[in-house]
Amino acid sequence: MRVKLGFIGLGGRGAAYGMTDGSIGLLGNVLNNAKNAVVTAICDKFPERIDAAAKKIVDNGDPMPFTTTDYTELMKADIDAIIISTSWDMHVKVALEGMRAGIPVAMEVGGTHFIDDCWKLVDCYEETGTPIFFMENCCFNKDETLVTSLVRNGVLGEIAYCQGYYAHDLREEIAGGIDTHHYRLKEYMENNCENYPTHQLGPISKILNITSGNRFVKLVSMATKAIGMKHFVQNNPKYKDRLGDVEWKQGDVVTTMIECENGETIFLKLDTTLPRLYERCVTVNGTKGFYNQTTQAVILDKDNIDHEHAQYKDFFFTQDKYKDYLPDDWRTITEEQIKSGHGGMDYIMLKHFIECIKDKKPMPIDVYDAVTWMSVTALSAKSIQNGSVPVECPDFTRGKYKTRKTVDVLDFPAVKD
Image (cartoon, rainbow, N blue to C red; front, side, top):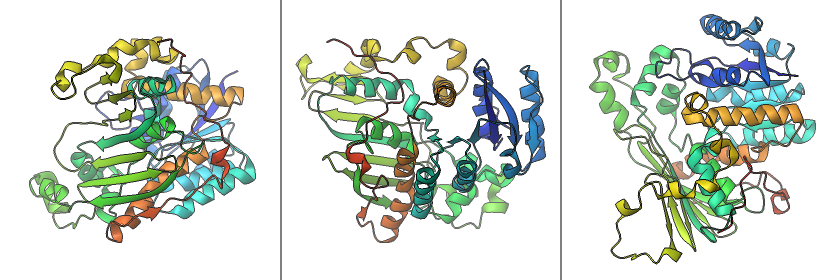
């Protein structure tokens, strides 16, 4: 029996519409999970996107799906669950509609500017019991699952500090939104905050058991001036006439520090409008060792390293020695699955979501995880607007975090040292 899925939002992320980088989007990854799922309904406000997605589904050997430009109509179709990959400002609204209709929801990532939206999601879940899954794909990535496994196995000792970046040169994508309808254009014109915290914060939160024995207590954020987009537009004839007068609000680099109840701190960096290479830089510091994603280095105290004189280049790619700590999903993944989107993590994420729906298992990233991570956007904006003052973080579990058990995104092996 295949899980019947409805898709709401068929743009670049949803169905790779207009993408030229080889991405197949969430739709393509669902089609790659064809043994366990079938797409029976699709929705977008642009008919050309619907037509393109419907063709992919039919070309995959599946029946023509129900199509509509009204997402409320899709919820009346023959579906078991909904995947929401709309613009950021529609995520919560559509998710609430789905949950109230009793349809399990998978919601794409992004922050929210409204703490009230977080409480609406929590209240709706607690009232309806409808499962909601937050599609933070980086929690399923190879590097992030490796370091989580190292932590679960005690290799890095007791953790004191974690950091992560969303460092991604998005200048063309942001400005290009004037032609492609990409939601980031409006975001960078109107807001100044940590607008995309969850790629780095999701895996770190799982490592630190946030919402399951631990919680965020307070945060403080700072933003640089906003000069990157203005410089980019002024030097690009394609956008200069149409965007040259825009006064961009989003600071080029936003840094955020979060204090956790159990004593750890987290450092986040958003860096998307200046020239640079892509980097998430997940870093974990513990009493027994250190992990860094950028250098792919594992440095353990027991190895008697000369901490004063050893060089990082001596430890580049040492994480390859710890392949036994990888979960089965990464030890058995095929080349085709790796190439299917974001290095394979999209495939693994959707495989597990479909299994959770099919087997009625708890969601590994649930409503409490989702709103805790998403809320950093609104909280960072408040901190920045008030002169980078500390801001208290709500406990969206209403105290349940003290006894909630961690549901890991994957099964991590127990490895003997």
